[in-house]
Image (cartoon, rainbow, N blue to C red; front, side):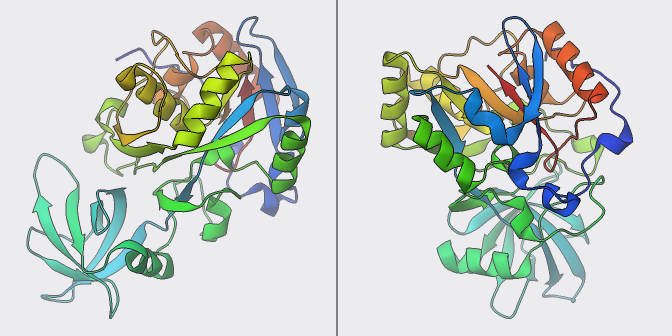
Length: 341
C-alpha cells in the first residue's frame, strides 16, 4: 500500500453541522480550485463552479441515495437489545451488517418492528460483519429502513441531524450507507445554470459501504471494500462523445472516479456496465476516463488522498491542503469543496 499523506488538521476545522445550520446555502460553501499541472490554488465559493467549466464539459454525478443505516432491534429469543449498522446491500433482501451493541450468532432472529425481522444467515470470527436476510425485500424493505433508521454519523458530529441533510438534491436510487458527499454542495439552481452554459450532466450509481468499523482491530483497506455500481448506457455514450469532441469529464466524487475507471479497465472501453468494485487508485494509477474531480476535504492519511494523487502530484496536493488549512476550510461531509482541474 502507498504511504499515507500526513498533516495536522485542527479539531475546529471538522464541520460539525450542515452549512444550512451555519446560515449559508449548501452551494455557498468555500471551494478551492486546484490546478493539477501547476499546483496553483484559487479560493472561491462552490456557487461559482460554472466559471471554471466550459461548454461541452461533462459532469458525472452519483445518483445513489443515502439510507438511514443505524437500526435498533431486539433478539426474538430473549429480547436483548441489538444495534445494527447496515454495511453493504447484497441483493433485494440481504445486507451485510455490523452489530454495534449486543451479541448475535448465526441463526438468531432479530426484530426491528412488528413488520420487519431479519435472520442472521452468516457469521465468522474472521470479520466483524454478519449477513442479514430480511423478511421483506425491495421497496417494502426500504420503506421500513427509512421509517426506522437513523443516518450514520461520526464522532465529530454531535447533533443527530435529520436524514435530509445527508442527501444530495439529485439522489434517486437508495443504497448508500454513507452519503456520497461530493455532490452535496449542488443546488438545482446551480445545476440548471451549468446546463444553460452548455455543461452536460450524466449519472452513475455507486452505493457506498460502511467505512468506519468502530474498532481498529477490523480496519478495512480500500482494496477489501467492495461496492456495487452501475453505469447506464446513456452515461457511457455521453462520456465517449465528450472525449471525442474535446470536452473534459469531471467526476463528482471519488465514487464516480472508481466506478468509471473500473469499467474502463475491465471492459477495455467505457460502456454500460454493472458490478462490484474494490479498485484502489493511487498516484501510480493512469486514469483513463476522468480529467478532473470535484471532491470534499479528506482527513489525514485517508485512502481518498491516494486517489487525489492520481490527479495531482502529491507535493502539490500537500501544499494545497496546507493552504486550505490556513484559509480555514472545513472538512468532511458538511464541509468545503475542492475542484481539481
